[in-house]
Length: 228
Image 1 (cartoon, rainbow, N blue to C red):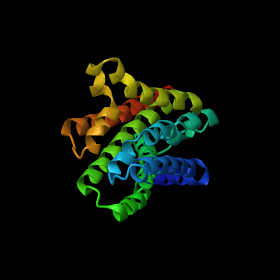
Image 2: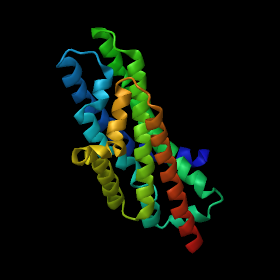
Image 3: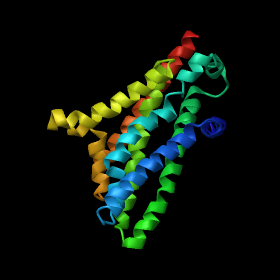
Image 4: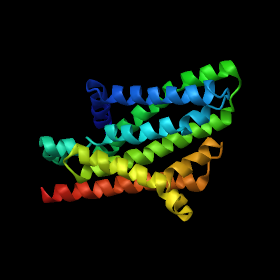
């Protein structure tokens, strides 16, 4: 599996994808930082993560990491080599998932420079900041897992990306149509972490959803392997 992780991780930086993801996210984060910290004078690091620019940009850049996962393999004709390789489908999927999540983790680490700047103006609530970082990683983990699942459904990267973005937006606006659906909104679940609360139910939901998407991807790819 390490070989798959290394290959996928390297591919993010031999192409512009990794740089675009990190760069665009940090730009959005900087905009949020300006308005939520410099503009309002507060020292709440968690507000930057939950601000509209950060969330909105995230909806469109996570698919950059996932839409090519299997769609590109199928379109380029290398899927056959992937399915018949000695590495199991499980290891391939987990390798792609971990590589994409690693990019998010690196980006998250880079945001600590903003935390340092905030500390210059005052003392942010450290436990709330840590809870926010954990929640953000869990949130992205779920989104990445779904994105990989979407990529396994089609050979068109654009379609895979649109499916992922559509899923993100739908779960985002669900509570606006019916408050009873707020439990299906990952954004709402992430909000509790920005309040310094690591909710067990929300954590279980994120992890369960991630595992379910990975298992469904395994089933889809295993079926394709049996057909081949």
